[in-house]
Length: 136
Image (cartoon, rainbow, N blue to C red; front, side):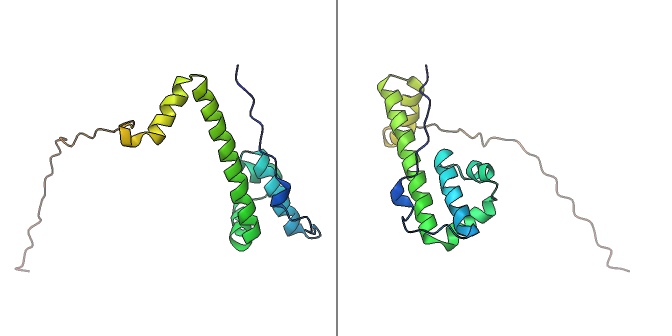
């Protein structure tokens, strides 16, 4: 039985208490932050859920350091949550989670996947030079 994941809620410390939602831009930013928190930090899904394009999201992020900080914090908290779930699965003996963790964190001990590329491909190339008639 799998545990249902709960999205990270926007912490009150991410949104200033004195913020005035009297303009559309501020309202849109708040909508995006709430949607981002509810959608596990996945930008495209959050934008789609509130009807604001990803281009606009990135413009807000680039132009507003407070928005950028809130986005980064939401995504970090979601990552913390997912990492906790991974550790929980490892503690339960979930083999896929154990292997995933080792591939990510145990590379210096040889836990990695390698692709073997066969460079012994036989490719024949024929180069043809056209003769230039210099007599004309």
